[in-house]
Image (cartoon, rainbow, N blue to C red):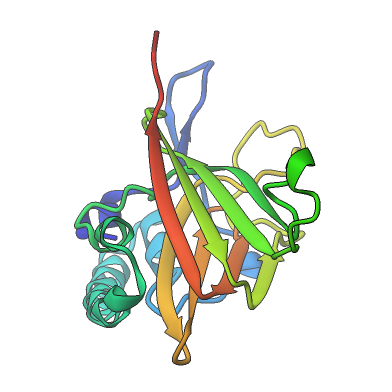
Length: 213
C-alpha cells in the first residue's frame, strides 16, 4: 500500500504490433470506493485525453487516504501476529497487481478422513500469485462473520482479445480495517470491478517462494 502504485496504468500489450494499449474505464461499471481507496485514481490515470489536473487531484486524495489507512492499521496491531502485521504495514504492498488463484470458503476446508468427527468451522482461504510470479501469498481467515463476493456483469476495465472470458483480473487495492471490538474486515478491489469483503476475527498471511527449476 504505497505511493509507487500511483504510477501504474491499466494497460496491455498487443502481440501483433507490440504497442502499449491504455485500457479505458467503463463509467457504467464504476465500483464503490473502499474506505481508503477511491477508484477515481485509476480512472484519472487511464482517461483520454489526458487530464493533468484531474490526475493530480486524484493522487493527492489517494495520499491522504493512504496516510489515514496506515494510521488506523496501527490500532489493529494487537489483533495480528507480528509477521502478518508487518506484511500489511509494509511500505511496498506485495499484493498489488497480483492475481487471485483461489478463493475458497466452507465448513470443512481442511477435511481429513481421520478427523471426520471434528466440529465444522467456517474458514476462508485466498491465494494470490505475485506480479513477478515468484511468490504465492496465502491468507487464511477464521471465526468468520460474513463473506461477500461481487463479480459484476459489466466490467470496469475490459482487456482486448479476452474472447468473452470472464476474468477477475489483477488486484488494485485491498484494506484491512476494524469492525467492532473483536472483528476485522478485509476488502479487495480488482481491475475488473470485482470486489470481495470478509468479516472475521483471526487471520494468518503466509508466503511461499516458487521454484524456477
